[in-house]
Length: 228
Image (cartoon, rainbow, N blue to C red):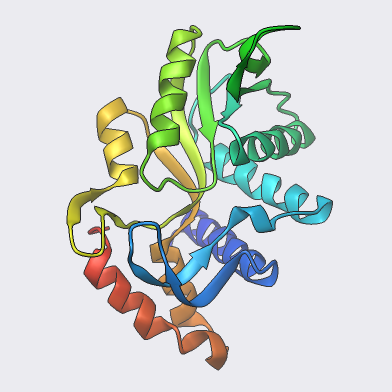
């Protein structure tokens, strides 16, 4: 294996281990918004203290820098994306990249600075930071807001790509939300880790308690997963 690829995989597996220890990633049986019974669940809201959020920001920054995408600023869609973008710009600053960021309000403010946008002026190539892409609604809104403000979306940066086809438990789409975003807007989606990484992590794990979930995750991928 190429040493750089090996380093990237190590980072992905480290992130999965980190998410498990933080109880942000859990295995069992969980019903998704689409009505599917998923053998795993990822909730970025569980990164809820300074140590965890600081580490998460460093994982985001490392994935973004490894992508070699050119960007001038970050944007965090309300609500989770605000904290995630803030943590990422702090981590980037620690590495010598002092990058501005902005975010939106859910409701328009009619006093003070007013409007829906907060933070640095939107300009240049903008990376949208979020936790996951489910239906893609948040990203589509973000793309429209960024373009209306004079910037250009450069990429979407997420924590976990579930690599899962859109639709419901019975009506399965042809593409994932991540694929649709890339096709519709012509921008890449960068993830810290993906379902593929989760499967390789479980396959390589010596922990029998974790490994017991491998068949269920593989079956879920066969039923709802995209072709990697």
